[in-house]
Length: 76
Image 1 (cartoon, rainbow, N blue to C red):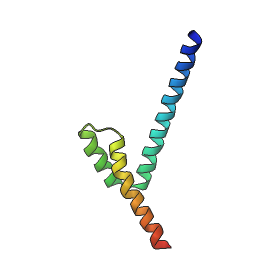
Image 2 (image 1 turned 30 degrees about the vertical axis):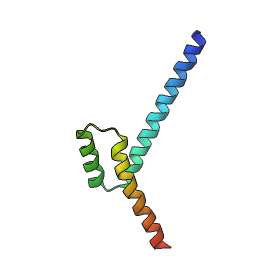
Image 3 (image 1 turned 90 degrees about the vertical axis):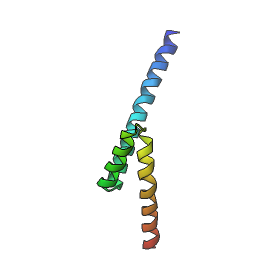
Image 4 (image 1 turned 45 degrees about the vertical axis):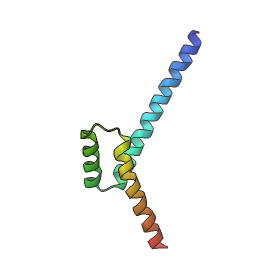
């Protein structure tokens, strides 16, 4: 029983660290791909409303991806 608890503890620690590192890398990617005023205004508006981290990133990610696709189409 102690071995199972130990493995469960190790697994949960690994999953927590993995999710934190993925969240941090996603935030850094969105910050680099988005103009600062858009990123900060969206982040502050959603933070003041008490929304989760996924909401501002989703609002930023979709327009950025649309702009990137449009630029790729224009270049071709």
